[in-house]
Length: 110
Image (cartoon, rainbow, N blue to C red; front, side, top):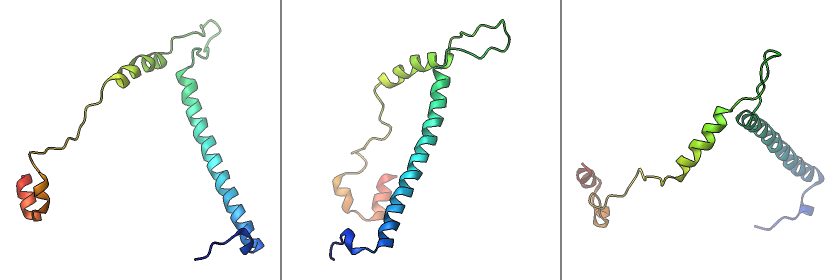
């Protein structure tokens, strides 16, 4: 298999390659913008400290309970050591059991 250089391709093939890369880049860029916009809405709602006034006499300041609970609970969750859910039991299957037939392995697992 010989390595092709850019000169080995025709002008239309080179154009198609460049167009494919540009289209892919544009698609990824649009997806990233949509993702960023949705995350920014969440961020603004969590960190919002003013509420839109319904009446002229309403106060605009309020305590954001979502941000408060997020800032209080998240560090407590992240600080704990995770418990392992799956553990390897050496008393059930040993290295010698790997050579056993399937029926005997299933019998031993029961």
